[in-house]
Image (tube, rainbow, N blue to C red; front, top):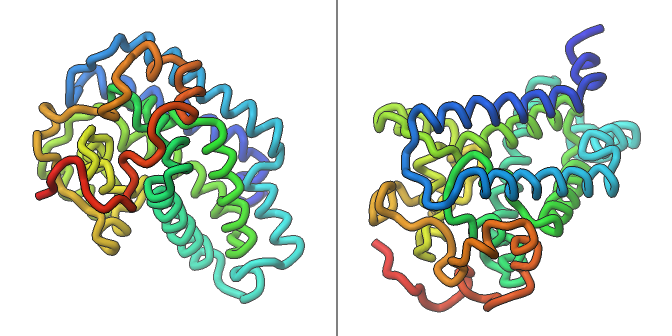
Length: 286
């Protein structure tokens, strides 16, 4: 059995193994070297954030049992998509596919901040009043379903190698947990890593309560898109220890830190606040 067959045969085990492995590593790292003190009880947040993760996983498994890998196999069988239509070396196809799928995730993220209806869903992720490894997987089920459908469409258009889809899924989950980690990295190491991957300090700016900072640093995995499209902000004005995490008008832990409140959050409050397409910011930008 070659390595491609091994990956395909063990795709679910590989993804789950990396998910739980990275979760444990980042969680232990947060205990040893935290960037900020937490403002909310950790056990409460973890129980409800991870509860939402398991709920989303169950919904996705029920609606899309074959998931992204199944769509990639279908596209391959039907010879749909760019990389199935043209003959490229596997390594080239896999690398370019991962990069292009990451670009789509960036654009999807920008749209979640630009369209008020999408922001209603996405603010479940931003309403977390603390920032740690569990924040990286905290999303409303409807947003998760929409994200999966966008991923399916991208796979059908690109026709990426199935192995590339598995690698992308593993990388996206791992880097999302890393860059949402409450981790204190040496400044020099952070500057170096930002050339290749989104770091915790880079993405934490995106979770600022100030809306101009929220609407920056949209990258989840690769850091290049923010610099390329002018959405990069190096540091928060108040500093990482002084900045406030969350959304200014959702500050009730009884709602934003409990699973029922998260599920109901899209259906309450103003749908236009924090969206990119407003004419003015509530906070001035540098």
